[in-house]
Every structure is written in C-alpha cells, then in structure tokens.
Image 1 (tube, rainbow, N blue to C red):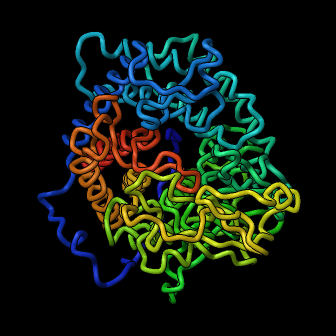
Image 2 (cartoon, rainbow, N blue to C red):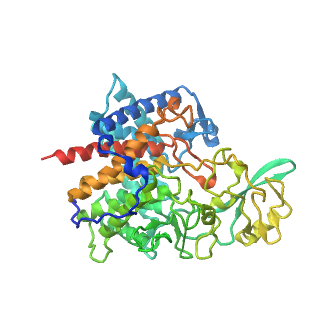
Length: 553
C-alpha cells in the first residue's frame, strides 16, 4: 500500500523469539541462497508479462468463466479474480477482490524503472488499468461493506502513485477516494469503537437430495452474529489514515485499540504467552470471538495473521503523523513486536504456511469440531462435505463427517429440514442431531492440505516494510532475512512457470500458484488468486526499496 509518513520507529531491540529447535527447512537456508534485488526485478517483469497475457485472454474471450451476473448484463465490466471453474473466473461488480487486478497493474506502472518493457507494453497496461478501474467507480458509495480499503485504496490509491496518470483521471480518482472514506467511516460505531464488517447474517449451506436432484439450500442459525468485525478490517485503516481529516484518524486508531483488546488469543502450548494469534471474527453483539474462516473457532487462519501484522504495522507507521492525541491509546509498538514474533514463530515449520497453521496438527479435527458456547461457533467447516472438494484435497488432518447439535439451526430451518435426505443418502436430522455430510468415512483420496501463498506474500511485504522503516540494524536484518526466505520459496517453488499444481495457470496469465481463498465455502482452494499476485508484486517492490534504503547516504 501507499501511506507516506516521516515516522521512524524508536524502540529497543527485540530479543529473538521462537522455539529453540528450528525446523530443518529454516536452518537449511544459507546466505548465498537469499533472495536478491535482481530476482525481485525479474519477478516484476514476469508479473507484467503474465498480466498482459491475461488481458489478451480477456480481450479475445478465451478461457473465461463468468459469474452469472456478468453473463446477464453484457455492459458490466467484470474483473479477473482467480483460476476456478476451469478458466479465469470473472467476477461481478461490488466484490471485495475487484481492486487488486487494476491495482497490480498500477503498481507495476508506478515502479516501471524496475520492470523490463517491450515497445507498447506500458501504454497497453495503462489503458487496461484505466478500463478496469471504471468497474469500481460506484463502489465509492457502496455502504453495505467494510471492504472499501481493498476495493478503492488498492486501486485508485495505487493509480495516484503513477506519474503518467493523466490529470483528469487523477482528479477523479482523488474525489472517489474522498467519497469512499466518508462511506467507510459511516460504518463506524462510537459506542462499540469499531467499523462494522458485514451486514449479512451467516447461513448454513446444506445440500439435500430431493426427487433425485441435488438441492443447495441456505438455513438460518439459531444465534447468528449481530455486529461482526473481522481481522481483515485492519487493512482499511491505512485508507483512512492517508487523509488529514481528524475524524478518520480517530476512527482508525480507536478501531485498532478495540481490535487489540478483543481479537487475540494464545495457543495452549504457548504457556509464556509470547505469540498472540488473531481470531478472524469477533461478534460485538454477543461479545464472542470465532473464525468464519479457519479450521475452527480457535485456530490460526494463515491469511488472518497477515492482515493482523500488516494492519498494526500501518498503525505504528502512522503514529508520528496522527491528527489526534494518542496518549490514551495502548502501546501499539509493543503489540506490533509481539505480532512480528508470532509470524517468526509460526513460520518455523515452513515459509509458505498451510491455509490454517493448525490444519496439519494431529488433532486438527478437534479444532474443526469445537463448538464451544464461549465462541461464535459457526463456520463453513462444520458442513464442508467431501463432495464439495476436489478428490485430493483435505482441509485438515483427521477430516471426517461431523455430527452437530440440531440446536445450531433456527426452528424455521429445522422445520424445513424435516424428512430431507443429505447428499450421502442419510436423513439430515437424526433426533436432536444434525448430520450434514453423512456418517461414513470420507474417501482416502483426500490427502493434500492446501497451503496459502497469498498469506506468505502478505507476510513478506509487511516484513520488508518493517525492515525498511526500523531504526535498529539488527531488527532490519532479522526481518528482511525472514522476508527473503519467504520470497525465495515463493519464487523458486510457486511461480506459475515453476509450479504445475494447475497446468493452465501459467498460460492463463497468473503469477503465483497455490493460494487458498475461502476453504469453509469450498472456494478458491490451492489455486491462483489475484490478491496473492498483488501482494507478491508488492513484496518485490518493497524488497527493492529495502535494499536501496540500506545503501542510501
């Protein structure tokens, strides 16, 4: 992202944290294997070539899969989101991921000195970025979501960094960014001290068989959340802070303060409470934490830890330019250091994490099946049937059908389910139990626990950013080295020209393989996703900035 401040961190050197026994993978990385500035530049050129390739597919209507709303309205500008449904999945407007596709192109253009260009390519990318940017004009007044930071700041905000942006577009984009900030701030509650994330209520998605046909239905819960706030919301704060409006700063810092108080827990094995982990969601209605995404209600969703780290890094970097008095706020510096320690600790078992850090634990199924009343218990994992997944995919170790208390659902839902048969040929309701996916063991073919390269890229970008602004040399080198290790792994093992997990990803124009988007809804699993590409490009840019910062006079 783009926040520009003069802030420099003034803090004591953090003592090294983490387990004493590093994994072999972590120990095996030698200095001569580290990730270089020239490799970062090569990655940026690769990304430019890939997205020009994807644009060619779109312009010629090749290998595209449209959301039905796109097909219903041929005037709608639909935007690439992921490789799914056998092609480049084109999503409709008002989706949270839509800013990343044009945003990535703006990033490449704004850093064009680090990209190798052929004749006409810069103009082509510029024209394409402007075209797809149009799809986001209406989102500046989209009041039903908190995701405006992703949608607007990661696209219009990135465009403003490109010196070649024409004056008319620059003025329009600034106005739309200002409008979006006002829209986003209207979701803030002074009483609760947070920006509300979602307006929708969660439903359980169940597949039943009726008259020989599969029927997918949504069933309401007995106790849905009423004021959900997710950890992703920390990523909106930079958008508000990149403004001189005092009210926006008050909202951003107070949201960070409230999130710090409610969104964190410690793993049972962390007896010294060194490594805070972020819950994905907190319901400020029932005052209960949980995970809409993640293996279970108390687990470490990998990308969520990235949103957490990146968000508090933004807060700390912005403190020097705060338009409000921060004397009554918690020690954000200390919290940021704890989060840095958490990421370092979590990555000891591999630089590209499983989609949830707990997914490969021997008792992962216990986290998945935990429905403690102390948490906001529902997530899609509870009804994630094997038939919704590719045959080789397993979401966690010990994956098996779940038997749930029927009281999880509302009475209206229970009435609708009376007499219905689940996908596996058994009654959905069995006494006071709910059996969404049958009771027989799943096929043994479900073996691969997906990783999430988008989370790894997000970590790398945040770590380089921290290393660039930190004062302490040991801190700089420590976290830049960790980012280098992540980027070396992503570059050598997960670029689509070097990873054949999906054989068409390179041809379609994606950059990074094996991201995982929404496991609970069986969506975008172990596949390229545009925001993974976006943060990978950003991490390469930050690597170059870091290298230049340490040689600057």
